[in-house]
Amino acid sequence: MNKIERAFALCNENKFDEALPILEEITQSDPQNSEAWRTLAQIHWFQKHDPEKAYDELIEALRCEPSNIWALVLMGNLLTKEKNDVEHAKQYYDKVLEYHPDNAIAINNIGATYMEVKDYKSALPYLEKALSIDDTYANSYYGLALCYYKLDRMEDAFKICHKGALKSSERPENPAVRDELIKLYVTVAKEYADRTNYLNVWRGIKDELEAVDHLNIRIVEDKTLSIHAKMEYAPLHAAKEHVIRYNPEKDFVEHLFIHEMMHLRMNQQATKANRAKAVISSERTKNAFKKRYLAFMKKKHGHIPAAELDKVINGLADGLGLQLMNCPLDLFVEHMIYKDYEIVRPIQMLSLFHIEQDNINAVKQAESNGFFPKQIVSANKIMNIATSMHFMDMYGINLIGQYHPTKQEYEHAKDLYDEFKAYLNTYNPGDEYEMLEYFVESFDMEDMVELVDESQVTAGMKADLSMKSDLKDLAEDALSEEDADAANAQFALNHQDGADATETMMMSMYMLGAMEYFDTLTPQDVHRIALEIAMVGVTGIDPKKKYSIKSIPGKEFGGYELLAHYYVSWARAIPHMLDKLGLPFSKAYEAALQMYNAKYNK
Image 1 (cartoon, rainbow, N blue to C red):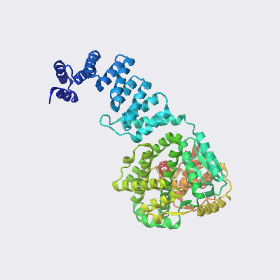
Image 2: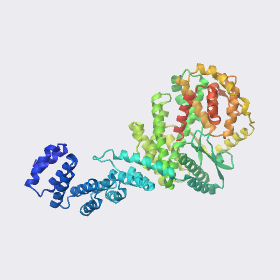
Image 3: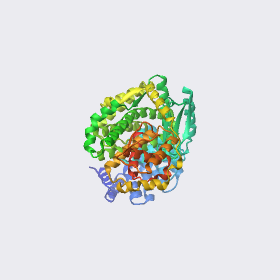
Image 4: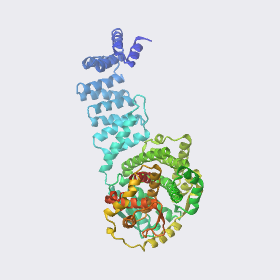
């Protein structure tokens, strides 16, 4: 190892005091050694805090070799930071571009120097040039996006963050820069979304969809909704108009409102092509579900009365069918939004990122508590991972590892996602139901999911609606706060909120079913149900007895199931009086909400 190699090795080991005399000896014996002069300047500036001496040594380095790239960059940096001489610094930076037009790292470093002195406008051309040379360099994406952000060019900042998340790769010299880029990405998306008027986007989509089937779309603001938004497709509700309800107080409601309109678009297209279908719950599917999982549920929750356990199992069966339907359809819906409405991307990214966090937490909870059959938990996890793969392809943020999938789970999810991508290449309206069938077959659950033509569901909905039209209004003053409180006081004493994990799980499943049922009703319907159950509750509701109420005809409730409907109906219709009921089910309600939000990507 010669002297110059020895000096460089000492510098790499941060032994600058040992390297310094060697470099000084080299410059005396070989005054034409440009790199020795440049390295001396670097030591005297950064380690010895002597910029004047460093300046003289850089002059010597450039005298020896005018095209020495790092001497040129260092001189420009020194003039900018120490002498505030940006004009002369630019002359050295321009020489870098002249002599080394393809060195992305050096050119990026020039931009970074301008950023350090908050001259973001001057930094832009260098960072843009660096990216044109190497479009995988994360440092340049981060620097350029930050410049745009500081210059209040939010749209440009978001686009660069987006492109950088998709294309950049980590480098050994700065392994944390991608994490910083993603943090900036989220910050920019929030500010950009806050400045965007999505109302005009809604109106444009609304006009487009109303022209398809000549049915009005009624938009209803509903602060009682526990979800962000929901769509009521006219043919499935025996109605003369489509209805989209949304809660303006929810986070990211702009994206999920548009999400519902994309579901409407797919419904319309599939209906027109005579290919619309729906997943339904039938005796055949419920019996198949029970045949497969009843033994597990009895062993795990054997102390639950048989009638109550049966209802829990039916709720699980219905929930599985809904997720198997929603997951593949939602992949198409989010793809439509991403492809057709670029202006929605900031809020879509934020919303899906938030949903990913909820899904990850829900999967962890389901795997740890052991309440549900492993096959169902695994199916839920695999479908969430497939959704996460789509999120990564759209926005470059990889959260798949946080699900901690096994190799088999990952490969299964990848197969489902690859099937989705294959359908995208040749998509025709209604193909989403073929993909749904592929999902079901891949989980070996054909006997537990029944897919029927939309016309069959429509006929059933019409019959159900005709029964509901005979309901009578209930007086709102039928129940006083004192009556409800007294009737449930003893029950609350004997059932501490969340103390019994199995009871809490059972109640959360009943509450999930109540939430899904109430989604099919108007707020006025839910309000009537809340009041009628409250009238029953005046004398107390016995978990061991059977009940029926006029507002839900043809339905017999076990005591626990009625209590779940009691709690959820008041949470939705009369939330300000919920605590007056004295029912110890807040923990079960929180768990039900979490499952509901995860299931419907809310």
